Amino acid sequence: MSMRQRGGHFLTEEEKKAAPKVTKELILRVLSYMKPYRVQFVIVFIAIIISSFLGIYPSILTGKIIDEGLIGRSMPKLITFIMLSLGVTVGANLIGVLESYMNTWIAQHITFDMRNQMYEHLSRMSTRFFMESHQGDIITRMTSDIDGVRQVIVNTFTSILSNSITLVIALIAMFRMNWFFAVLALVIVPLFALPARSAGQKRWQLTRESQECNDQINSILNETLSVSGQLLVKLFGMEDFEIRRYKRFNKKMTQLNIRESMAGRWFRVVISSISSVGPMLLYLSGGILMMKYDRNITVGDITVLVSLLSRMYGPVNSLLNIQTDWIRAMAMFTRIFSYFDMKPEIENAPDALKPDHADGDIEFRNVSFRYNEEKMILKDISFRLEHGRSIAIVGPSGSGKSTTVNLIPRLYDVTDGEVLFDGNDVRKLDLAWLRSQIGIVTQDTYLFNGTIRENLMYANIKASEEDMMEACRKANIHDFIIKQENGYDTQVGNRGLKLSGGEKQRISIARVLLKDPSVMIFDEATASLDSISEKAIQDAIDPLVTSRTSILIAHRLSTILAADEILVIKDGVIAERGTHEQLVNAGGVYTELYDTQFKPELHEKKEGNPC
Ligand code: ADP
Image 1 (tube, rainbow, N blue to C red):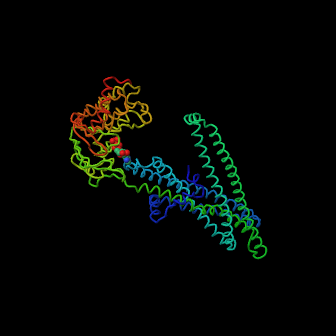
Image 2: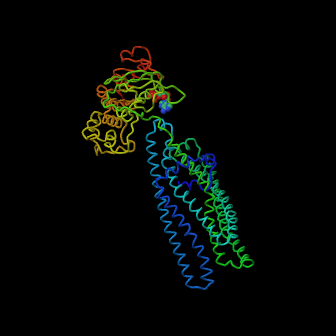
Image 3: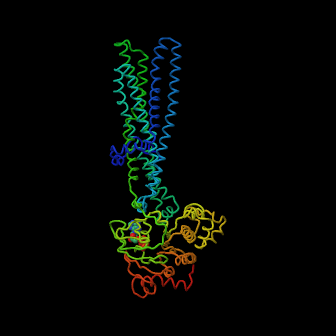
């Protein structure tokens, strides 16, 4: 919805409250976006001056048509002035075309720059930013707000400029003809423009009320006429209640609509009265002046003055509303800039290291971490994972397992302590390099809407066809893919919805393999899958675990047993560590997990899973 449609000419209470402080910095910052296009702006400026002048000129020519052509009874003069007037009007319109082309061009280029800058900036923001902001807000900033900028440039700025210029030219022309009329016009115009403004305000209020009422009606319809909504209404016997509620809102809406259209009617009455009363006053006072006091005043002069006067209403009306547009525009710029000002929490160190070779040796040294001030999530975690070995992290849900692994590729930075990769603090390593060394397979895999091939190649666009198939063979998914009608070119559907959880999971394992990282992290990769899918994934993971440095966040015994060491995390601390044999009879958290979670799993396997 455009800013004008949304806003009308009046500010809402929230907008008034949120009106930004317009500082010199803000204005300079807005101007900095226009600076690359200053030549084009100068062209627009000149075009506006010329077209405003040419727009007023026919009014002045009207005087000559009447005095010298009609009253002076001169055919050649009449025709000359008429032709001139027509020519000037055509000229003004042609320049208007140039002006709006340049205008649109500038606005599109400025928003093009802003969109690119915003997308780049947002892409570099940290995980926390995306976790904590509403997705809708981000999209609104990218779309509506930036589109608002375009409108501000096309409408607000040019309207301020062209209206002020028209007004000044009209006033100069009036003063040059007769100072008395000019002063009279200065009094009359605002006097009549103001009531029009308050009539508009009333109408705007009613429009807003009816919009709100309409929103409520829509939500009632959405809630009660959907399949599940209808079911709820029926099961609770609420039909009569809902019918009464609907009728009440429907009645309110009808009344509001009637009032709104009548307010519009009054608005038009006021507007048309203004446009007729003003000129009448000028005819009257001009007539009195001409007949009684000043014989030099001609009929043409009075006509010109009336015509100039009527040309002033529009600009005055717009300029009276400029404040609203201005505040709204500044609020929008402030919102956009506040996004630009957010610093990505995690950035590359100035002299970041980019080693030629990676072993994938990971060490946590007294790591503590909290997401926010409230609660320490990880407390003094220390462990080392040597090149080529594997660790399983187990523990109750919410104990901090995913948080631990997220610190390795720096999705978040530690609050205290250090995470080392090949002996270097991860904060000192080049971020892109570090992330290229780590492959994570999470439980909820995300596939883009595209083909299987596109999704796989996302990890490594340089990979060959053979590499891709090899990765899929290792991930136990190649046979499935080639059985599909289009093989590797099969569409996965929106977010991979056309595939089962297990298939998606294996594709995502293949994707990580194609990236060929030195460390693999599996975050409960086999949770929430049936046992057949789980087996297929397990078969894919097991050889990987033995051949690469890996961390497995696991809650299935089979996964845990594949690891060299087990870390048991509870409430953010390492409660126990060791091998399965060492831990199972220790009588601690692991024993408890074993009894409640792993043992039933063993039974299930022995007895055969009914699914
Ligand atoms: P696990 O993987 O062991 O189930 P997590 O590492 O996901 O546990 O979560 C550990 C704790 O951190 C939980 O209490 C969870 O509520 C909290 N937590 C997880 N992610 C966030 C986040 N983005 N912001 C704030 N708290 C979080």
